[in-house]
Length: 481
Image (cartoon, rainbow, N blue to C red; front, side):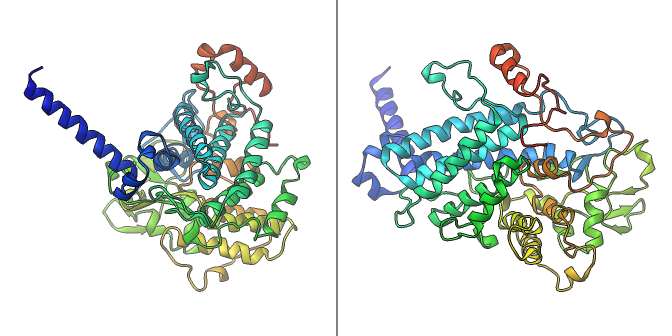
C-alpha cells in the first residue's frame, strides 16, 4: 500500500470510529466526560434496536398470521386452502422463533450491561422486555428453551426446553422484581428511547400492565390464583401503577426517520390481494363505528358505485365469482409513516379490569368496558360518538362475550394477542364454514420449527413429551384448558 493510500485509510477508519461513537452517544459532552462508555456496550445502545426489531416483527406477524386466523382479513382471491381456512404449514412459526431468540440474546446483553453499570431502571426494562418476548414464545409453541437459551458462548449448543409453567413462574417473578427496581428519581442517562422517551414512570406502568396481561393469560388454572393477584395489584395503584390513559400506552411511533421506518417499504403491499372480512366489518357496521374509515376502504359494485363497508366471508366456499362487488380492503395509511405499532395499550388494561369486574373481583364493570371502547378508538385516532352506547349492540350487557368482542377490536394489530385471547376464552364467536381444514377447529399452537428435530433431537423429543406426545396444532398449551 502506498503512503498516500495509507493516509487515506487512516482518515477513513478514524472518521468511521468517530461517527459510530457519535451515533452511540449523540452527546459531545458525554464523550469528553466519560470516554469509557464508548468502548463498551451500554444498555442504552441496545434498547432502541430491540424495541424496533420486536415491534416491527410483531406488526408483520399480526398481518400475516393473526389477521387470517382471527377473521380480520383474508387473501383474495383464495378458492382453496390458506391460513384463514386453518390450513397451517409446518414452518409457520419459524420466523417468530428465530426473531424472538435473536432479540432475547440482545436483551440478555442489555441486562448484563445494566447490572454491571448498576443502573436499576435499565435492568428493570430488560426484565420487562424479556418477559414480553418469552410470553409470546411460550404462548405460540408451549415448552421452549429458556434456562439454557442464548448460551452458545458458554458452550450450550443444544438447549433444554423449559415447561410453560416454569417459564410463566419465572417471567412473572421477573416482572415483580422489575417493578421494585424502578427508581423514579434516577434519570435514564443514555440516548432517548423510542418507546417512552426515557419516561421511567411509563416504563414502570408498562411493566405492571404486562404483568396484568400475563396473569390473565394463565387465569384458567384455578390453582394459580391469578384473579386474586390481579385484584391485589389493581387495588394498590401506588405500588403497581398501570396505564391510565392512551397517551401512556406502549405504542411505538414509527416516524419515518431512518432507521425508525415502516416495516412496509411499499405500503401498497399491505393490501395487495387482500380483503377485510365480512365478520370484522359487520360488527363495526352494526355499531356505526368511527374506526371503519381508519381501517378499511369503501366497497364498490362492479360499476364503481359505493356500497359502504363490505367484506368477504372468511374461509368461503365456492368460487370467487360469487362476489359481484369489489370488497373493502385495508386503508394503507395505517402502514405509512408516521404510523403506530401497538404493543400494549391503555384500552387493553381497561378491558382486563372490565373482565375482572364482570367476574365479581372488582367494581365498575360498565365504566371499565366503556373506557376500553373509548380508548380503543383513541389509539387509532378517532373519537367515541356521543350516542355510541345507546346502541344495544354496543352497550355493555354484563357478559364476558360482549367484553371480549370489543377487546378483539382493541387488540387489532397487536401481534398475536387476538389469537391468544380467543384460545383463552373462545371469544369472539367466529363463523365457521365447511371449507375449513382441521375440522373447523381453531389451531391451539404452532408447530416447532422442523430443524429442531434434526439439530436438537433429544431435547425436542422431551419437549414433545411435555406437550403430551404430539407436536400438533391442536395440542393445547398449559393454560389453555
